[in-house]
Amino acid sequence: MKKWSVALMVVISLVILAACGQKKYEPVAINEETDICVICNMQVKDDAFATQLTTKDGKNYKFDDIGCMNEWKEQNGTENIGMDYVRDYNDKEWVEYSKASYVYDESLRTPMAYGVVSFKDKAAAEAFVEEQGVGAVLTAGDLSSHEWKQNTDMMNMDMHGGEGHMDEHMSEEDADSKEMDM
Image 1 (cartoon, rainbow, N blue to C red):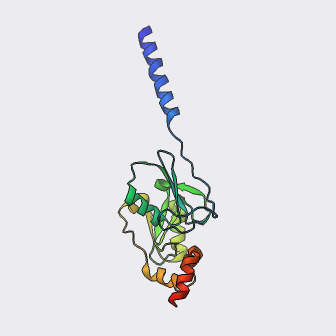
Image 2: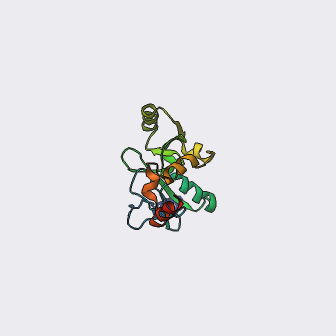
Image 3: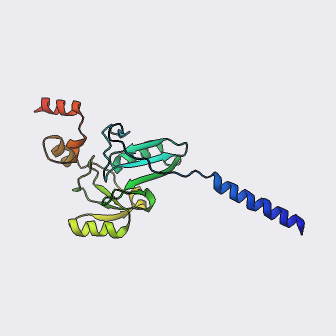
C-alpha cells in the first residue's frame, strides 16, 4: 500500500511542477513613439487595429494591421508562437487571437487595407455587421483559409490624398515622395 501512495505523490508532484513551468504570455502595451510594425515598418498606433504576438522564446512582435501579423506567420510559421493577440474594435482590450471573432469586408478601412476587424465575441462582430451594413463574421479558423489581400484601390486612394487611416501611418519620407509624385 505504501508503494502506491509514494508513487501517487510523485505523480501528483510532477503534474504540479509541470503546470508551474508553463510560460504565461501577456500582451505588451503599445508605445506609439517607438513601436514599428515588423512587416510594413509603419508606426503601430495604440488603436483597435494593433495586433501582436509573443514567441515561445519571449520575443514580442507588434503589427499595425492583422494582415501584417498574418504575413509574419506566413513567413515564419506558427509553431514557435506562444500567444497572439488582437484588439477588440470597440474597447481596444487585448483578446487572444484564437478566441476573437472577426469581420471582413474589402471596403472596411484598416491601416494596411486588409479589411479585417477583430472583436472579443461573436455578438459584437454581428452587431458591427448590422450597424455597418457590410461584412462577414469569421472565426480565427476561418482566417486560416482567408484570402489575405490588400484592397489596392483603398490604398491608392489613401496614399493619394484620400482621407483615412493610411495617411496617419505615412512616414515623412513617404509624404515627401508623395509630394514629388504630384
